[in-house]
Amino acid sequence: MTATPNDNARSEKSEKYARALVEAARQEGRANKDLVQWKHAMKFSFEVLEILSAMRNEDDLDLVSDVERAYNELLESEDETVSVTVTTAVPMDDDLRAKVRAKAEKELDAPIYLVERVEPSIIGGIILEAHGKRFDASVKAQLANIRKTLTSTSIGSDD
Image 1 (spheres, rainbow, N blue to C red):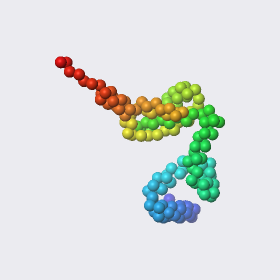
Image 2: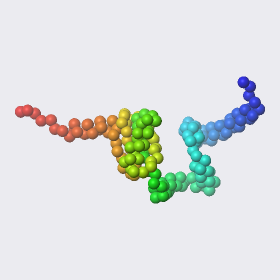
Image 3: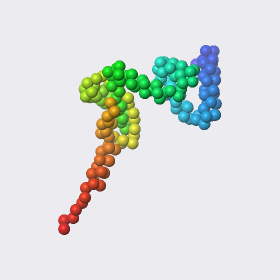
């Protein structure tokens, strides 16, 4: 398969952008970090990219955290959907995701938006967070409870 002129132009343009990004990132000492961020950039919606661009043009990038806070407040006051953060040791499969979603919707009596996090250090189990409350059914938490129980239990003698 031979490259078309369009393919060559696309490749040259891509390399130009990549070189500019690498050079800028190296000057800041974060070439690898910027690559990781770049890989996530494709996940951003058009709206997020547009707002970030507008904020950059207005020199308002220092407001990113404030915008996040205001966004959360608006969602909580105007939207009945509840954001539920689910932390597991390994990525959830579709079956577990459906079960968690159904259980959370039933318990919260509202539609939910699942935010999935993978944290291998919890070993197994699940952690759910919603409305500022946390339900920790991780293996790590269970082991900590066992450790606490064992250290607080005094072992007496039979004398």
